[in-house]
Image (cartoon, rainbow, N blue to C red):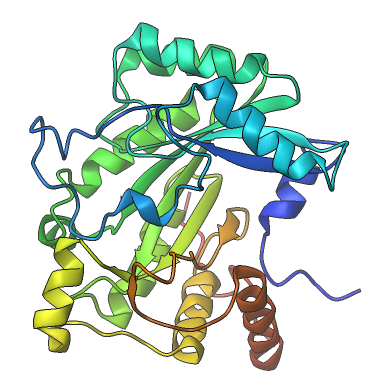
Length: 310
């Protein structure tokens, strides 16, 4: 049997659940401190939440209604499927504590839901909420995913992120210490970053107590500050073709700690919102292509990771 080239998310879920499990995205009606003036206005320069919200993921529907609509879609084909409620839209830990807990508990009360995944920012994890989530993780599956995006403060400032990398280190460390599965999101190819910076991201993130990571290619989206900047100054951006990005993602993977689960390498935005790049492949097709390239290079996750000295 061929050696696994990277630590994939499907195998990770099989360690936690006996059967098929599907994430269902939820819009909990939250906002973001980088939009309401607490941290900033206008949000991150790359962000348009329409790019990852399914049609049923609408804040005018209750958490229960959104989940039930998503479950109806999948249950027709997979009647025994179980589900993870994915609080994905905006900052899903940014609200009154009682309201947050009510949303999470409502999701877990829906029949067929066996856990929750919470997407948030590193600067939005207060101690009281983390205490609750740590307790919750002892009775059900809980993952907290932080939008790190870059390990370089210069980049975080350029994209109007509203926090620095030290904030991400703190949030990830505290969350993992609370016994919660802890993930990070990273964008490969943000403007101004070099290939050496990409490799450094892998090294620096490998030093943190992360369990999972999601990689995203840089996507330029209509209606965002970054999308507008690209259309006016395309020379400021390095938009690779698919094969170049695959090699870059593999270079990153080679330097990533081997036990970190790679949930995905790319994301897909709706075609009508996407300015660039236009690769024309689905996520599973991309992964198959990446695996072929890993075989050609005879490489695997962590082969160039250097374990820190004790």
